[in-house]
Length: 295
Length: 273
Image: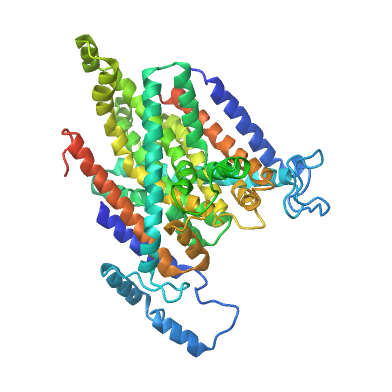
Protein backbone atom coordinates (compact mmCIF):
# COMPACT_ATOMS: atom_id res chain seq x y z
CA UNK A 1 0.00 0.00 0.00
CA UNK A 2 2.86 2.34 0.81
CA UNK A 3 4.52 2.74 -2.59
CA UNK A 4 1.38 3.56 -4.66
CA UNK A 5 0.35 6.10 -2.03
CA UNK A 6 3.74 7.81 -2.16
CA UNK A 7 3.80 7.87 -5.98
CA UNK A 8 0.26 9.27 -6.00
CA UNK A 9 1.15 11.95 -3.49
CA UNK A 10 4.27 12.91 -5.44
CA UNK A 11 2.41 13.05 -8.75
CA UNK A 12 -0.61 14.88 -7.34
CA UNK A 13 1.46 17.51 -5.60
CA UNK A 14 3.54 17.97 -8.74
CA UNK A 15 0.47 18.42 -10.93
CA UNK A 16 -1.37 20.64 -8.48
CA UNK A 17 1.64 22.89 -8.04
CA UNK A 18 1.94 23.31 -11.80
CA UNK A 19 -1.72 24.00 -12.45
CA UNK A 20 -1.85 26.70 -9.83
CA UNK A 21 -2.42 30.13 -11.33
CA UNK A 22 0.30 32.61 -10.44
CA UNK A 23 3.94 31.71 -9.99
CA UNK A 24 6.45 32.17 -7.20
CA UNK A 25 8.25 34.87 -9.14
CA UNK A 26 5.24 37.09 -9.71
CA UNK A 27 6.33 40.32 -8.11
CA UNK A 28 5.15 43.89 -8.12
CA UNK A 29 8.15 44.81 -10.17
CA UNK A 30 7.96 43.90 -13.83
CA UNK A 31 11.11 41.98 -14.67
CA UNK A 32 12.72 42.09 -18.11
CA UNK A 33 11.85 38.98 -20.13
CA UNK A 34 15.51 37.91 -20.22
CA UNK A 35 15.67 37.69 -16.45
CA UNK A 36 12.43 35.77 -16.28
CA UNK A 37 13.80 33.38 -18.90
CA UNK A 38 16.96 32.96 -16.84
CA UNK A 39 15.08 32.23 -13.65
CA UNK A 40 12.80 29.78 -15.39
CA UNK A 41 15.75 28.03 -16.98
CA UNK A 42 17.46 27.73 -13.62
CA UNK A 43 14.47 26.01 -12.04
CA UNK A 44 13.63 24.01 -15.21
CA UNK A 45 10.33 25.86 -15.51
CA UNK A 46 10.90 26.40 -19.24
CA UNK A 47 10.85 22.70 -20.09
CA UNK A 48 7.71 20.79 -21.12
CA UNK A 49 5.66 19.41 -18.24
CA UNK A 50 6.38 15.68 -18.72
CA UNK A 51 10.11 16.42 -18.75
CA UNK A 52 9.80 18.52 -15.59
CA UNK A 53 7.94 15.63 -14.00
CA UNK A 54 10.67 13.14 -14.90
CA UNK A 55 13.40 15.49 -13.66
CA UNK A 56 11.47 15.97 -10.44
CA UNK A 57 10.96 12.26 -9.85
CA UNK A 58 14.61 11.58 -10.61
CA UNK A 59 15.69 14.17 -8.06
CA UNK A 60 13.25 12.73 -5.52
CA UNK A 61 14.76 9.27 -5.84
CA UNK A 62 18.14 10.83 -5.09
CA UNK A 63 16.66 12.45 -2.00
CA UNK A 64 17.03 15.91 -3.49
CA UNK A 65 13.96 18.05 -2.95
CA UNK A 66 15.35 21.01 -4.87
CA UNK A 67 16.00 24.60 -3.81
CA UNK A 68 13.41 26.69 -2.02
CA UNK A 69 12.00 29.48 -4.20
CA UNK A 70 11.56 31.90 -1.33
CA UNK A 71 14.29 31.11 1.18
CA UNK A 72 17.08 31.90 -1.23
CA UNK A 73 20.17 29.77 -1.01
CA UNK A 74 18.47 27.14 1.08
CA UNK A 75 17.55 23.69 -0.08
CA UNK A 76 14.19 22.23 0.85
CA UNK A 77 16.04 19.28 2.35
CA UNK A 78 17.95 21.66 4.67
CA UNK A 79 14.77 23.35 5.83
CA UNK A 80 13.15 20.00 6.49
CA UNK A 81 16.24 18.75 8.33
CA UNK A 82 16.08 21.82 10.61
CA UNK A 83 12.35 21.78 11.24
CA UNK A 84 11.54 18.08 11.29
CA UNK A 85 13.02 17.33 14.76
CA UNK A 86 10.85 20.05 16.27
CA UNK A 87 7.68 18.67 14.71
CA UNK A 88 8.69 15.16 15.65
CA UNK A 89 9.21 16.13 19.30
CA UNK A 90 5.83 17.85 19.32
CA UNK A 91 4.23 14.74 17.82
CA UNK A 92 5.85 12.46 20.41
CA UNK A 93 4.66 14.66 23.28
CA UNK A 94 1.18 14.60 21.80
CA UNK A 95 1.23 10.81 21.54
CA UNK A 96 2.18 10.71 25.24
CA UNK A 97 -0.81 12.94 26.00
CA UNK A 98 -3.12 10.80 23.86
CA UNK A 99 -2.12 7.48 25.39
CA UNK A 100 -1.40 8.81 28.88
CA UNK A 101 -4.80 10.44 29.18
CA UNK A 102 -6.87 8.20 26.93
CA UNK A 103 -6.02 4.71 28.14
CA UNK A 104 -6.29 5.34 31.92
CA UNK A 105 -9.50 7.30 31.42
CA UNK A 106 -10.97 4.47 29.34
CA UNK A 107 -9.90 1.87 31.91
CA UNK A 108 -11.44 3.80 34.79
CA UNK A 109 -14.57 4.32 32.79
CA UNK A 110 -14.94 0.64 31.91
CA UNK A 111 -14.13 -0.62 35.39
CA UNK A 112 -16.66 1.60 37.11
CA UNK A 113 -19.23 1.32 34.34
CA UNK A 114 -22.27 3.62 34.62
CA UNK A 115 -20.85 5.36 37.67
CA UNK A 116 -20.63 9.12 37.91
CA UNK A 117 -16.94 8.80 37.08
CA UNK A 118 -17.74 6.82 33.94
CA UNK A 119 -20.25 9.43 32.81
CA UNK A 120 -17.84 12.28 33.42
CA UNK A 121 -15.19 10.51 31.38
CA UNK A 122 -17.67 9.92 28.56
CA UNK A 123 -18.78 13.55 28.59
CA UNK A 124 -15.18 14.77 28.62
CA UNK A 125 -14.34 12.39 25.78
CA UNK A 126 -17.29 13.66 23.73
CA UNK A 127 -16.15 17.22 24.34
CA UNK A 128 -12.56 16.35 23.49
CA UNK A 129 -13.64 14.79 20.20
CA UNK A 130 -15.71 17.85 19.33
CA UNK A 131 -13.27 20.60 20.18
CA UNK A 132 -11.05 21.73 17.31
CA UNK A 133 -7.40 21.76 18.33
CA UNK A 134 -7.05 25.45 17.50
CA UNK A 135 -9.93 26.29 19.84
CA UNK A 136 -8.35 24.22 22.61
CA UNK A 137 -4.97 25.81 21.91
CA UNK A 138 -6.34 29.34 21.89
CA UNK A 139 -8.37 28.87 25.06
CA UNK A 140 -5.54 27.22 26.94
CA UNK A 141 -3.18 30.03 25.92
CA UNK A 142 -5.72 32.54 27.16
CA UNK A 143 -6.23 30.77 30.50
CA UNK A 144 -2.77 29.42 31.30
CA UNK A 145 -0.62 32.10 29.73
CA UNK A 146 -2.57 35.34 29.72
CA UNK A 147 -4.79 34.90 32.78
CA UNK A 148 -2.71 32.79 35.15
CA UNK A 149 0.78 33.38 33.69
CA UNK A 150 1.72 29.77 34.33
CA UNK A 151 3.03 28.63 30.98
CA UNK A 152 4.58 30.39 27.98
CA UNK A 153 2.10 31.17 25.18
CA UNK A 154 4.48 30.51 22.29
CA UNK A 155 7.87 29.38 20.97
CA UNK A 156 9.76 26.18 21.57
CA UNK A 157 12.53 26.56 24.08
CA UNK A 158 12.25 23.78 26.58
CA UNK A 159 9.89 21.40 28.35
CA UNK A 160 7.69 24.20 29.70
CA UNK A 161 6.97 25.26 26.15
CA UNK A 162 5.84 21.79 25.18
CA UNK A 163 3.00 21.34 27.65
CA UNK A 164 0.27 23.49 26.10
CA UNK A 165 0.90 22.54 22.44
CA UNK A 166 1.10 18.83 23.24
CA UNK A 167 -2.10 19.05 25.24
CA UNK A 168 -3.95 21.04 22.57
CA UNK A 169 -2.83 18.62 19.87
CA UNK A 170 -3.45 15.44 21.81
CA UNK A 171 -6.59 16.05 23.87
CA UNK A 172 -9.05 15.41 21.06
CA UNK A 173 -7.47 12.11 20.11
CA UNK A 174 -7.29 11.17 23.79
CA UNK A 175 -11.09 11.35 23.73
CA UNK A 176 -11.22 8.78 20.91
CA UNK A 177 -8.76 6.52 22.68
CA UNK A 178 -10.70 6.75 25.95
CA UNK A 179 -13.91 5.72 24.20
CA UNK A 180 -12.20 2.97 22.30
CA UNK A 181 -10.47 1.62 25.42
CA UNK A 182 -13.77 1.67 27.30
CA UNK A 183 -15.69 -0.19 24.58
CA UNK A 184 -13.01 -2.85 24.15
CA UNK A 185 -12.48 -3.32 27.86
CA UNK A 186 -16.17 -3.75 28.49
CA UNK A 187 -16.31 -6.58 25.99
CA UNK A 188 -13.15 -8.16 27.44
CA UNK A 189 -14.48 -7.79 30.99
CA UNK A 190 -17.58 -9.74 29.97
CA UNK A 191 -15.58 -12.64 28.55
CA UNK A 192 -15.27 -16.10 30.05
CA UNK A 193 -11.56 -16.04 30.79
CA UNK A 194 -12.00 -12.98 32.98
CA UNK A 195 -14.66 -14.83 34.93
CA UNK A 196 -12.20 -17.71 35.24
CA UNK A 197 -9.48 -15.32 36.47
CA UNK A 198 -11.88 -13.94 39.06
CA UNK A 199 -12.91 -17.45 40.09
CA UNK A 200 -9.25 -18.38 40.53
CA UNK A 201 -9.09 -15.60 43.08
CA UNK A 202 -6.70 -13.27 41.22
CA UNK A 203 -6.62 -9.77 42.62
CA UNK A 204 -8.39 -7.02 40.71
CA UNK A 205 -5.20 -5.14 39.71
CA UNK A 206 -3.71 -8.33 38.26
CA UNK A 207 -6.92 -8.98 36.35
CA UNK A 208 -7.16 -5.42 35.07
CA UNK A 209 -3.57 -4.95 33.98
CA UNK A 210 -2.45 -8.44 33.06
CA UNK A 211 -5.58 -9.88 31.53
CA UNK A 212 -7.91 -7.08 30.52
CA UNK A 213 -5.44 -4.41 29.40
CA UNK A 214 -3.32 -6.90 27.50
CA UNK A 215 -6.32 -8.14 25.56
CA UNK A 216 -7.71 -4.66 24.95
CA UNK A 217 -4.57 -3.25 23.43
CA UNK A 218 -5.08 -4.49 19.84
CA UNK A 219 -7.78 -2.05 18.74
CA UNK A 220 -5.72 0.78 20.25
CA UNK A 221 -2.64 -0.32 18.30
CA UNK A 222 -4.69 -0.57 15.11
CA UNK A 223 -5.86 3.06 15.33
CA UNK A 224 -2.32 4.31 15.85
CA UNK A 225 -1.93 4.62 12.06
CA UNK A 226 -4.86 6.99 11.49
CA UNK A 227 -3.89 8.67 14.75
CA UNK A 228 -0.44 9.47 13.43
CA UNK A 229 -1.99 10.93 10.30
CA UNK A 230 -4.28 13.04 12.46
CA UNK A 231 -1.44 14.27 14.64
CA UNK A 232 0.68 15.07 11.60
CA UNK A 233 -1.97 17.22 9.96
CA UNK A 234 -3.05 18.60 13.31
CA UNK A 235 0.48 19.71 14.03
CA UNK A 236 0.58 22.55 11.53
CA UNK A 237 -2.36 24.27 13.17
CA UNK A 238 -0.73 23.91 16.57
CA UNK A 239 2.62 25.10 15.24
CA UNK A 240 0.84 28.10 13.74
CA UNK A 241 -0.85 28.99 17.04
CA UNK A 242 2.19 28.52 19.24
CA UNK A 243 4.73 29.89 16.74
CA UNK A 244 6.67 26.64 16.91
CA UNK A 245 9.42 26.55 14.28
CA UNK A 246 8.39 23.15 12.91
CA UNK A 247 7.62 21.82 9.44
CA UNK A 248 3.95 22.68 9.73
CA UNK A 249 4.52 26.38 10.13
CA UNK A 250 6.89 26.37 7.18
CA UNK A 251 4.27 24.49 5.21
CA UNK A 252 1.63 27.17 5.84
CA UNK A 253 4.06 29.93 4.91
CA UNK A 254 5.12 27.98 1.83
CA UNK A 255 1.50 27.67 0.72
CA UNK A 256 0.95 31.41 1.09
CA UNK A 257 4.24 32.13 -0.70
CA UNK A 258 3.63 29.58 -3.49
CA UNK A 259 7.03 28.09 -2.72
CA UNK A 260 6.34 24.94 -4.79
CA UNK A 261 9.42 22.88 -3.93
CA UNK A 262 8.91 23.48 -0.22
CA UNK A 263 5.20 22.58 -0.43
CA UNK A 264 5.98 19.42 -2.35
CA UNK A 265 8.86 18.49 -0.07
CA UNK A 266 6.92 18.89 3.15
CA UNK A 267 3.88 17.09 1.72
CA UNK A 268 6.08 14.16 0.75
CA UNK A 269 7.73 14.01 4.15
CA UNK A 270 4.29 13.93 5.75
CA UNK A 271 3.15 11.18 3.39
CA UNK A 272 6.29 9.13 4.05
CA UNK A 273 5.78 9.55 7.81
CA UNK A 274 2.24 8.28 7.61
CA UNK A 275 3.19 5.34 5.43
CA UNK A 276 6.00 4.44 7.86
CA UNK A 277 3.65 4.73 10.82
CA UNK A 278 1.11 2.46 9.16
CA UNK A 279 3.78 -0.10 8.35
CA UNK A 280 5.09 -0.08 11.92
CA UNK A 281 1.55 -0.42 13.24
CA UNK A 282 0.93 -3.42 10.98
CA UNK A 283 4.16 -5.04 12.12
CA UNK A 284 3.54 -4.42 15.82
CA UNK A 285 0.01 -5.71 15.38
CA UNK A 286 1.19 -8.92 13.81
CA UNK A 287 3.82 -9.32 16.50
CA UNK A 288 1.39 -8.69 19.37
CA UNK A 289 -1.47 -10.76 18.07
CA UNK A 290 -0.41 -14.17 16.74
CA UNK A 291 -3.82 -14.57 15.07
CA UNK A 292 -2.89 -11.91 12.53
CA UNK A 293 -0.54 -12.95 9.76
CA UNK A 294 1.09 -10.43 7.48
CA UNK A 295 0.73 -10.83 3.76
CA UNK B 1 -38.08 1.51 18.71
CA UNK B 2 -35.74 3.47 20.90
CA UNK B 3 -36.25 7.13 21.48
CA UNK B 4 -33.70 9.85 21.00
CA UNK B 5 -31.82 10.61 24.20
CA UNK B 6 -32.22 13.97 25.89
CA UNK B 7 -28.73 15.06 24.83
CA UNK B 8 -29.57 14.26 21.20
CA UNK B 9 -32.87 16.14 21.39
CA UNK B 10 -31.21 19.19 22.91
CA UNK B 11 -28.55 19.01 20.22
CA UNK B 12 -31.14 18.78 17.47
CA UNK B 13 -32.92 21.79 18.95
CA UNK B 14 -29.71 23.79 19.13
CA UNK B 15 -28.82 22.91 15.55
CA UNK B 16 -32.31 23.86 14.34
CA UNK B 17 -32.02 27.26 16.01
CA UNK B 18 -28.54 27.88 14.61
CA UNK B 19 -29.65 26.84 11.12
CA UNK B 20 -32.74 29.02 11.31
CA UNK B 21 -30.67 32.00 12.40
CA UNK B 22 -28.20 31.31 9.61
CA UNK B 23 -30.89 31.09 6.94
CA UNK B 24 -32.68 34.19 8.22
CA UNK B 25 -29.42 36.11 8.71
CA UNK B 26 -30.42 39.37 6.97
CA UNK B 27 -33.57 39.59 9.12
CA UNK B 28 -32.11 38.36 12.40
CA UNK B 29 -28.75 40.07 12.48
CA UNK B 30 -28.84 43.42 14.28
CA UNK B 31 -26.36 44.98 11.84
CA UNK B 32 -24.98 44.12 8.44
CA UNK B 33 -21.73 42.16 8.52
CA UNK B 34 -19.71 45.11 7.22
CA UNK B 35 -21.29 48.09 8.97
CA UNK B 36 -18.60 49.87 10.95
CA UNK B 37 -19.30 51.57 14.24
CA UNK B 38 -16.17 53.69 14.20
CA UNK B 39 -16.81 55.10 17.65
CA UNK B 40 -16.72 51.64 19.15
CA UNK B 41 -13.85 49.63 17.77
CA UNK B 42 -12.72 46.57 19.74
CA UNK B 43 -15.60 47.09 22.15
CA UNK B 44 -16.45 44.53 24.78
CA UNK B 45 -19.92 42.97 24.84
CA UNK B 46 -22.60 45.55 25.63
CA UNK B 47 -26.33 46.06 25.12
CA UNK B 48 -25.66 47.70 21.78
CA UNK B 49 -23.26 45.01 20.58
CA UNK B 50 -24.05 41.75 22.36
CA UNK B 51 -20.76 40.15 21.45
CA UNK B 52 -18.71 43.30 21.13
CA UNK B 53 -17.06 44.64 17.99
CA UNK B 54 -13.88 43.85 16.07
CA UNK B 55 -10.99 46.15 15.27
CA UNK B 56 -12.95 47.84 12.49
CA UNK B 57 -15.96 48.36 14.73
CA UNK B 58 -18.04 45.67 13.06
CA UNK B 59 -20.67 43.98 15.21
CA UNK B 60 -19.39 40.51 16.16
CA UNK B 61 -22.86 39.00 16.68
CA UNK B 62 -23.89 39.97 13.17
CA UNK B 63 -20.66 38.64 11.74
CA UNK B 64 -21.19 35.40 13.67
CA UNK B 65 -24.69 35.06 12.23
CA UNK B 66 -23.45 35.58 8.69
CA UNK B 67 -20.49 33.33 9.44
CA UNK B 68 -22.90 30.58 10.48
CA UNK B 69 -24.22 30.65 6.90
CA UNK B 70 -20.80 29.88 5.46
CA UNK B 71 -19.78 27.34 8.11
CA UNK B 72 -23.04 25.41 8.05
CA UNK B 73 -23.47 25.64 4.29
CA UNK B 74 -20.04 24.18 3.71
CA UNK B 75 -20.45 21.58 6.44
CA UNK B 76 -23.84 20.32 5.32
CA UNK B 77 -23.58 20.59 1.56
CA UNK B 78 -20.08 19.18 1.10
CA UNK B 79 -21.22 16.22 3.18
CA UNK B 80 -24.40 15.78 1.13
CA UNK B 81 -22.35 15.93 -2.07
CA UNK B 82 -19.78 13.50 -0.71
CA UNK B 83 -22.60 11.22 0.40
CA UNK B 84 -24.13 11.25 -3.07
CA UNK B 85 -20.88 10.62 -4.89
CA UNK B 86 -19.76 8.01 -2.38
CA UNK B 87 -23.10 6.20 -2.39
CA UNK B 88 -23.28 6.01 -6.17
CA UNK B 89 -19.62 4.96 -6.46
CA UNK B 90 -19.87 2.38 -3.69
CA UNK B 91 -23.13 0.95 -4.96
CA UNK B 92 -21.83 0.57 -8.51
CA UNK B 93 -18.60 -0.96 -7.27
CA UNK B 94 -20.39 -3.50 -5.13
CA UNK B 95 -23.08 -4.28 -7.66
CA UNK B 96 -20.80 -4.75 -10.66
CA UNK B 97 -18.24 -6.66 -8.61
CA UNK B 98 -15.25 -8.56 -9.98
CA UNK B 99 -12.34 -6.72 -11.51
CA UNK B 100 -14.15 -3.37 -11.76
CA UNK B 101 -14.93 -3.52 -8.07
CA UNK B 102 -11.31 -4.29 -7.30
CA UNK B 103 -10.01 -1.41 -9.37
CA UNK B 104 -12.58 1.04 -8.01
CA UNK B 105 -11.69 0.10 -4.45
CA UNK B 106 -7.94 0.50 -5.10
CA UNK B 107 -8.66 4.11 -6.05
CA UNK B 108 -10.60 4.53 -2.82
CA UNK B 109 -7.74 2.98 -0.83
CA UNK B 110 -5.21 5.44 -2.23
CA UNK B 111 -7.42 8.50 -1.69
CA UNK B 112 -8.23 7.21 1.79
CA UNK B 113 -4.56 6.88 2.68
CA UNK B 114 -3.79 10.50 1.79
CA UNK B 115 -3.82 12.80 4.79
CA UNK B 116 -7.09 14.75 4.54
CA UNK B 117 -6.18 18.22 5.66
CA UNK B 118 -2.98 18.17 3.65
CA UNK B 119 -4.86 17.25 0.48
CA UNK B 120 -7.55 19.84 1.20
CA UNK B 121 -4.87 22.51 1.52
CA UNK B 122 -3.22 21.45 -1.75
CA UNK B 123 -6.55 21.44 -3.59
CA UNK B 124 -7.50 24.86 -2.23
CA UNK B 125 -4.12 26.09 -3.42
CA UNK B 126 -5.14 24.93 -6.88
CA UNK B 127 -8.74 26.17 -6.75
CA UNK B 128 -7.92 29.41 -5.03
CA UNK B 129 -9.06 30.44 -1.58
CA UNK B 130 -12.74 30.93 -0.98
CA UNK B 131 -16.00 29.09 -0.64
CA UNK B 132 -15.78 27.24 -3.98
CA UNK B 133 -12.25 25.97 -3.39
CA UNK B 134 -12.95 24.76 0.13
CA UNK B 135 -16.19 23.19 -1.02
CA UNK B 136 -14.63 21.17 -3.83
CA UNK B 137 -11.60 20.17 -1.75
CA UNK B 138 -13.72 18.90 1.13
CA UNK B 139 -15.99 16.94 -1.18
CA UNK B 140 -13.04 15.38 -2.99
CA UNK B 141 -11.48 13.97 0.15
CA UNK B 142 -14.58 12.89 2.04
CA UNK B 143 -16.53 10.80 -0.45
CA UNK B 144 -14.24 7.77 -0.02
CA UNK B 145 -15.40 6.96 3.51
CA UNK B 146 -18.97 6.84 2.24
CA UNK B 147 -18.00 4.76 -0.79
CA UNK B 148 -16.44 2.09 1.42
CA UNK B 149 -19.39 2.03 3.77
CA UNK B 150 -22.01 1.85 1.04
CA UNK B 151 -20.10 -0.81 -0.84
CA UNK B 152 -20.02 -3.01 2.27
CA UNK B 153 -23.72 -2.52 2.89
CA UNK B 154 -24.70 -3.20 -0.72
CA UNK B 155 -22.57 -6.36 -0.76
CA UNK B 156 -24.36 -7.53 2.36
CA UNK B 157 -27.88 -6.62 1.29
CA UNK B 158 -27.72 -7.79 -2.29
CA UNK B 159 -27.60 -11.41 -1.10
CA UNK B 160 -30.81 -11.07 0.89
CA UNK B 161 -33.74 -13.17 -0.36
CA UNK B 162 -35.95 -10.20 -1.19
CA UNK B 163 -33.29 -8.76 -3.46
CA UNK B 164 -32.87 -12.14 -5.12
CA UNK B 165 -36.65 -12.25 -5.51
CA UNK B 166 -36.65 -8.84 -7.19
CA UNK B 167 -33.91 -10.01 -9.51
CA UNK B 168 -35.86 -13.20 -10.31
CA UNK B 169 -38.85 -11.03 -11.18
CA UNK B 170 -36.66 -9.32 -13.79
CA UNK B 171 -36.05 -5.98 -12.07
CA UNK B 172 -33.23 -3.94 -13.62
CA UNK B 173 -30.05 -3.31 -11.57
CA UNK B 174 -30.95 0.38 -11.29
CA UNK B 175 -34.37 -0.50 -9.95
CA UNK B 176 -32.94 -3.00 -7.49
CA UNK B 177 -30.38 -0.50 -6.22
CA UNK B 178 -32.88 2.33 -5.91
CA UNK B 179 -36.03 0.54 -4.77
CA UNK B 180 -34.74 -2.49 -2.87
CA UNK B 181 -31.29 -1.65 -1.53
CA UNK B 182 -31.27 2.13 -1.11
CA UNK B 183 -34.17 2.31 1.42
CA UNK B 184 -32.26 -0.17 3.58
CA UNK B 185 -29.08 1.85 3.75
CA UNK B 186 -30.86 5.16 4.30
CA UNK B 187 -30.54 4.78 8.07
CA UNK B 188 -26.80 4.28 7.91
CA UNK B 189 -26.49 7.20 5.50
CA UNK B 190 -28.35 9.43 7.97
CA UNK B 191 -25.97 8.40 10.75
CA UNK B 192 -22.99 9.00 8.46
CA UNK B 193 -24.37 12.41 7.53
CA UNK B 194 -24.56 13.54 11.14
CA UNK B 195 -21.04 12.28 11.84
CA UNK B 196 -19.48 13.68 8.67
CA UNK B 197 -20.96 17.18 8.88
CA UNK B 198 -18.96 18.05 12.02
CA UNK B 199 -15.82 16.66 10.37
CA UNK B 200 -16.39 19.01 7.44
CA UNK B 201 -17.12 21.96 9.74
CA UNK B 202 -13.96 21.18 11.67
CA UNK B 203 -11.87 21.00 8.50
CA UNK B 204 -13.28 24.24 7.13
CA UNK B 205 -12.81 26.13 10.37
CA UNK B 206 -9.28 24.82 10.82
CA UNK B 207 -8.41 25.81 7.27
CA UNK B 208 -9.90 29.27 7.69
CA UNK B 209 -8.21 29.66 11.04
CA UNK B 210 -4.75 29.19 9.55
CA UNK B 211 -5.69 31.63 6.81
CA UNK B 212 -5.96 29.13 3.96
CA UNK B 213 -9.73 28.75 3.80
CA UNK B 214 -12.54 31.24 3.39
CA UNK B 215 -11.30 34.55 2.00
CA UNK B 216 -12.72 38.03 2.61
CA UNK B 217 -15.33 39.47 2.08
CA UNK B 218 -16.88 36.20 3.27
CA UNK B 219 -16.16 35.02 6.74
CA UNK B 220 -16.84 31.80 8.55
CA UNK B 221 -16.53 31.02 12.24
CA UNK B 222 -13.03 29.79 11.57
CA UNK B 223 -11.88 33.01 9.93
CA UNK B 224 -13.57 35.06 12.68
CA UNK B 225 -11.61 33.04 15.23
CA UNK B 226 -8.46 33.81 13.27
CA UNK B 227 -9.30 37.53 13.33
CA UNK B 228 -9.70 37.29 17.09
CA UNK B 229 -6.56 35.24 17.63
CA UNK B 230 -4.09 38.12 17.31
CA UNK B 231 -6.00 40.14 19.91
CA UNK B 232 -6.57 37.30 22.36
CA UNK B 233 -4.57 38.82 25.18
CA UNK B 234 -6.67 41.93 25.61
CA UNK B 235 -9.87 41.22 23.68
CA UNK B 236 -10.50 37.50 24.28
CA UNK B 237 -14.21 37.78 23.43
CA UNK B 238 -13.27 38.11 19.75
CA UNK B 239 -12.02 34.55 19.66
CA UNK B 240 -14.09 33.02 22.47
CA UNK B 241 -17.47 33.56 20.78
CA UNK B 242 -16.56 32.03 17.40
CA UNK B 243 -14.73 29.19 19.17
CA UNK B 244 -17.76 28.45 21.32
CA UNK B 245 -20.00 28.43 18.24
CA UNK B 246 -17.76 25.95 16.43
CA UNK B 247 -17.38 23.74 19.50
CA UNK B 248 -21.10 23.64 20.36
CA UNK B 249 -22.12 22.98 16.78
CA UNK B 250 -19.68 20.10 16.36
CA UNK B 251 -20.62 18.70 19.78
CA UNK B 252 -24.32 18.85 18.89
CA UNK B 253 -23.81 17.04 15.60
CA UNK B 254 -21.84 14.34 17.40
CA UNK B 255 -24.51 13.91 20.09
CA UNK B 256 -27.19 13.81 17.43
CA UNK B 257 -25.17 11.22 15.52
CA UNK B 258 -24.79 9.07 18.64
CA UNK B 259 -28.52 9.24 19.23
CA UNK B 260 -29.42 8.45 15.62
CA UNK B 261 -26.99 5.56 15.56
CA UNK B 262 -28.57 4.00 18.62
CA UNK B 263 -31.94 4.10 16.90
CA UNK B 264 -31.07 3.37 13.28
CA UNK B 265 -27.99 1.21 13.44
CA UNK B 266 -27.64 -0.48 16.84
CA UNK B 267 -25.14 -3.05 15.60
CA UNK B 268 -22.50 -0.58 14.59
CA UNK B 269 -22.23 1.23 17.91
CA UNK B 270 -18.47 0.97 17.85
CA UNK B 271 -15.91 3.69 17.98
CA UNK B 272 -13.81 4.45 14.99
CA UNK B 273 -11.25 7.14 14.56
